[in-house]
Amino acid sequence: MITKEETTILKGVAIVFMLYLHLFNQMPNVSLCEYFITIGDIPFVHLLTRACNPVSFFLILGGYGMYMVYRKGDKNRYIRILKLYIHYWVILALFLLVGFIVYGRTPGSFLTILSNVTGFQATYNGEIWFLLPYALLSVTSSWLFSITDKFKTKYVLLVLFILNLCTSFLISRYGDAFFYHNYLAYDPLLYFHLMFSFYLGAMTAKHQWIAQISKSKTGQFIKKYGLWLLLLIIGFRVLFRTGAFHAFYVYAFIVIFLNLKRASIIDKSLAFLGQHSMNMWMIHSWFCYYLFKDFIYGFKYPVVIFLVLMTVSVLTSMIVNSLCRPIEKLISKKSSSIGLTT
Image 1 (cartoon, helix red, strand yellow):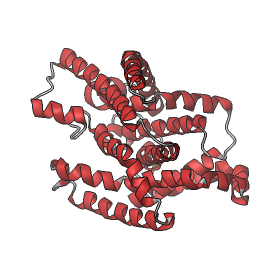
Image 2 (spheres, helix red, strand yellow; image 1 turned 90 degrees about the vertical axis):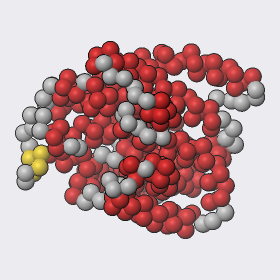
Image 3 (cartoon, rainbow, N blue to C red; image 1 turned 45 degrees about the vertical axis):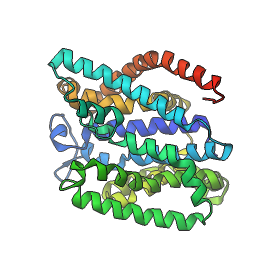
Image 4 (cartoon, one colour; image 1 turned 45 degrees about the horizontal axis):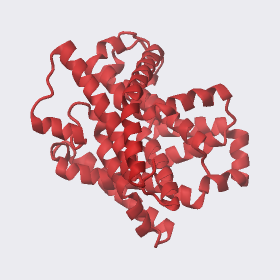
């Protein structure tokens, strides 16, 4: 099984992917940087973003974790989602306040505020689009697993993969024309779109596939040639960027990475980032897109830009944790008094 420590390390990998992706996946932003390597006419720093798929990472890990608690009897999923939203609300309040003080920006109409507070429509910070569909998957996971456990895993995965392809087509074809402007249709579509990766993680927990691979001859091969295999799939992902490969690429990355011999400093660094990954997801784009873009990209060199964004995101996450901790303690106390655990 994937241990709690390994899960935290993998979350660290996911947040590294996310920050790198959002910094360099748009050519207008890359043009603000000083880069030295190009392949054809494309900067290498931009090409490498194709190998960064953080959404599938978080979904697979989320599905794995939710199935583990489902198997044990999950009574506090609503509390976990509430804590997730508390962090989101604190971060939202902080940066709206900064935006008002620095730029005089106001939060807008009551409907705009309500849409953003719930995560229904992320107009303040577009990278929060993932919040509501993920929360819905988490809340309904026990119900989903109770239904799908009645069927063979391979058939459920096949159906969900086909559903993923269909929703991908709808989003790519009709996103700009319809879905991005009609969230009553878009949010439910995202819920089903994300289900395949989430369920893939859940079935990994159910059948312990990664543990089985690690004990097999395939696992021994991966342990021997893991670094080369990791470079190979990253190269493959750079060359073939279709969204249909996202979940499979990330799953292969996770399997190889967990069987790879890693320096302790790497694990410790990733585990530290993993502990802050939730906050960093909701924080980083405020710096690099919405409020302090000139400051972040003013460092010119991609490595420096990335490290600066990582640093300010972690430091802000520490502040957010200190603000959320008293609220979380109160929730834990209240939930214990009514017979729930956190």
